[in-house]
Length: 338
Ligand SMILES: *Cc1c(COP(=O)(O)O)cnc(C)c1O
Image (cartoon, rainbow, N blue to C red; front, side, top):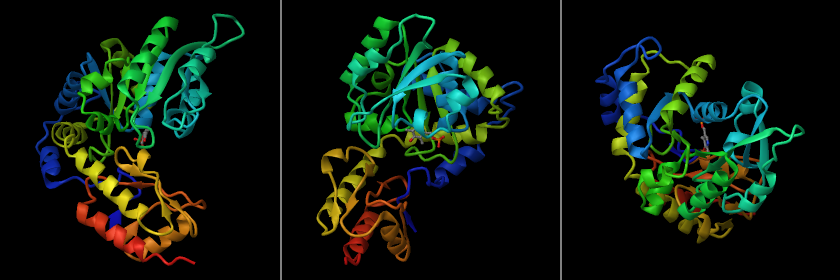
């Protein structure tokens, strides 16, 4: 089965299983787990920050960040289509009593910084207190430029806000730009990274930032029921992935590009190649819906996300080879048009 639904579907490689099997373990809630501590140190060092905290998901690390930066009645400014506004069950509002202030995302995933500035509330009893700006990189596979992130930093500094990066796929952006993880992280007070996407571990994310931030986040993680005991079995996979699976993201990007170019050459598929920057592509169908294509694909052992519309999301990852991409192009070339 060739699974293009998401980069979250990967299974551990033999080497990753080996790292997990050999991980020294402890009770991370009671007195610490050496493999979790090692991952946290390594992630912090890689991003040039003081500290990191391992958690179960990117939803949780985003929530830990928002609740650590903001208190009850504060607000965070965020993209209308940002994961940490739209796709996380309203957790910041439900569990943190933190109000979101959404701003329209530009087509490239950025927020217009003039609109952000206009949304920052004055210190006045009528308003929630604006505390935090959240950016997302990559956004639908598109890379936000370093210069833009630096401008966002200047803006938040002028207004005394904090800056968070939902870097679920930050390493795809790092690979694409050819910068270091430290350069990418530099403007941000906190960064959430999913180890369970392109990096290929079964479960887990890290939040990276100052010691003060992760100390707060550690208490909140416990409150949320996110304290995990012998979590080193997962953290060891995470450290393995950070050490071994970053460079190979370039293969996923090359595969996504080849798939996009192959599909763009087929009648009935339209692909905006300028938007295919990392491991995601969004072809539009001239015939039928995403559901139709998904049921056709499944008959050929290809799994894609369906939907009632004509836009399809395809994601490349560790378990999709260059040969798989050629297979998908061949199968889709034979998709019946009517
Ligand atoms: C996947 C994702 C998350 C969080 O994902 P979990 O499934 O909770 O690990 C956060 N932000 C973005 C942009 C994502 O793609």
